[in-house]
Amino acid sequence: MNQLSAKEIVTEALKKALPKLPTSEISNTKNELYADLGIDSRRFIRIIQELEILLKREINDEDVLEKDLITIDDLISFIDQLRNNGLAS
Amino acid sequence: MIYTCDKNMIPSSWCNSLVDFASLFKDDDQKFNKIQKSLNVAPKQPLSLLRQSNNFIDQVIPIPDELKKLYTQYRPTPFCRAFNLEHKLETNAHIYYKFEGANISGSHKLNTALAQAFYYKKAGVKHVVTGTGAGQWGTAIAYACKLFNLKCTVFMVGISLRQKPQRRMIMEAFGATVYESPTDLTETGKKSRLADPLCIGSLAIASGEAIELANNDKHAKYAVGSGENSVLLHQTIIGLEAINQLAAYDELPDYVVACMGTGSNFGGISLPFMRVFKETGHKCRFVAAEPVACPKFTKGKYAYDINDFSGTTPLSKMFTLGSTYLAPSIHAAGLLYHGTSRLLSALYANKEFDAVAIPQNEALQAGLLFAETEGILPAPESAHAIAAAINIIKQSKNSNRPIKILINISGHGNFDLLAYDEFVKGHLDDGYPCDIDIKNSLRMLDEFNKKLQEDEHS
Image (cartoon, rainbow over all chains, first blue to last red; front, top):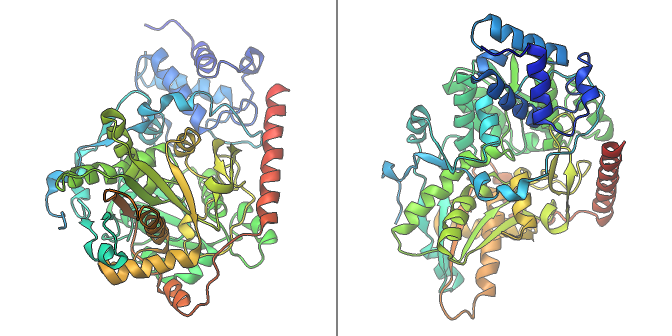
């Protein structure tokens, strides 16, 4: 069973997908993914790929469809939801 | 001889050229345009398409069976030797062409429209929004959405819609809602109308309106007709088929020629041949024919630029005239996008192909000649490729051995009769832009790139 919290998973995924991003930007979870961190759709797919490695499962369209992912907090909630649905480790 | 009936010619997989040219993409997506705007980063496209656009591992990607079955409706597309054109030109060159216009949408755009609709449906999307220039993409996606029972909204470039009202008719016949862009439905459209009171429009504006609508509506997703890596992937079905079909003639092309807008038909025919010829060492020149009205390769710069007027889509390093560039109005509206595919831009920077700029009248003259000799009226866009091919043939007149040239005819021109009518009556200009317009646009492009550098270091 994965010991990392949702916040740790998101932090790790952001660091790996976007190594040039300052840690201080990631630790402020109120930061907006697009407006503050510069995450556009091309960068977001890299984050999805890192999350899949950390969660040991594929993230499907059904998982993200119609989700609101504006802040880092939203991304953390998203990971929590995946886990609560019993679909992620 | 025309090869149309052998369904075995349809490939089972697409050719993923990202693998072939991965080294050219090392740092090209590191720039970000800082627009302080709250945005939901949940993907606007299905993850399957995003994965296709970012796959640097798999050499081929299988075409899903359900999609391949749909392709059998109109594929393999005709592949012919243009004997009559050769005779008319009094040349010993062997001219081949592949015709992508014999389907309901009238162009190669259907190849990716069907694929995209398939993946959107699979992802649970119900509403697809898009922008279209000349209308071929809008028609294709409207038809594909109809097949997959998806709602479809299309923003079409204003001047193009007025020149070709039949395009609106056919899109609406398939259930799409069509808007003449720029509209006052979106902030992008309203802003554009201030600078463009005649509502000529551009693909960047139409796309920007579509993206804004998708950004503001959780249930709507944006589909793109050209430029994206996944779109190029889908279009490689053209080149893969052509390789099989040409094998029957036991000849290899010395030239492969296609028109260049954002790159989907040029990439579609060329990329599979580039892979094969890299492996075999066969020498072939690939030539992109762009209009003088939008000379992004021949007069543009290789720089970072925005893709649409919403400014929210990822920046691409590409050959561009600058996003503020508004091309003179010519009938080949499908070739008037300010930039082009980042994959093809990287290839051009690496001298993998050549580009030539063709004046409008020369293109349409070539189009009429092709209609006279081969019985197909090409789209004005495709006519640019024919004109470029004829120039190559004229330049090779003294060649010791006959050259072999393959032209991709991306679509039919049956809705472009106004273009040919105006040409015949001598009412068209060539579409040359004012040098000052290009200069101003490139200056703003330079300023934009300088700002990106400064933002990166701040």
